[in-house]
Structure formats: C-alpha cells, structure tokens
Length: 110
Image 1 (cartoon, helix red, strand yellow):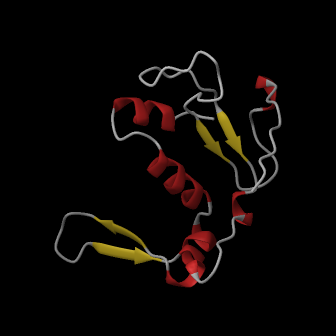
Image 2 (cartoon, helix red, strand yellow):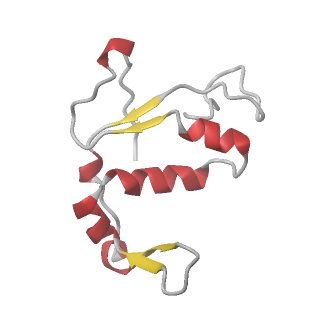
C-alpha cells in the first residue's frame, strides 16, 4: 500500500502510494517461537558496540520499532525507499493525531 501497487497508475520509480497509519502496534504477535528466538541486531561501528534484542524486549520498550523494522525491510533499498518510509505512521494505541486528514479504514485479511 505504501508503494501504490494497488493503484492503476503504479510506476516502480515513482512515489504514487498513500500515507499509511498502523494502529495498535503493541498487539503485534509472532508465530511459533519467534518471540523468544528471533533477534534484532544493531551495530554502532565501535568495538563492543553490538546490541541484540528479542521482540519480547523491544515490545516492552518501543513496540512501534517492530513494525517499522519489518516494513523498512520490504521497501526498496534506495532513495525512493527512504522517501516512502516517511509515509508510514505507526501508533501504539488506537488513537492517532491524523484524524484531520480523514483517513479511510482498510482491514487486511491474514
């Protein structure tokens, strides 16, 4: 939806998508043992700067990061992907500050 593949005017090199608001980020769930065994790894570039965290730990501190990390991995790794990532707005609860833009609700089947 962020890239605009659902629109008839889709072009791979153009941002023809919409802004996406994801609600209830704290209710994200993983299948199987991924909540315990999956690891998010970040490296600062300094010796000893490797940090590892499980989804369970991240959900306690900042649940928005889980969805942002997943969506960022699906976007193209270029200038367009960085621009498209700014169209994603993740909210922890069911309330958001984008009501004045009159968003339309879309339910996805999973």
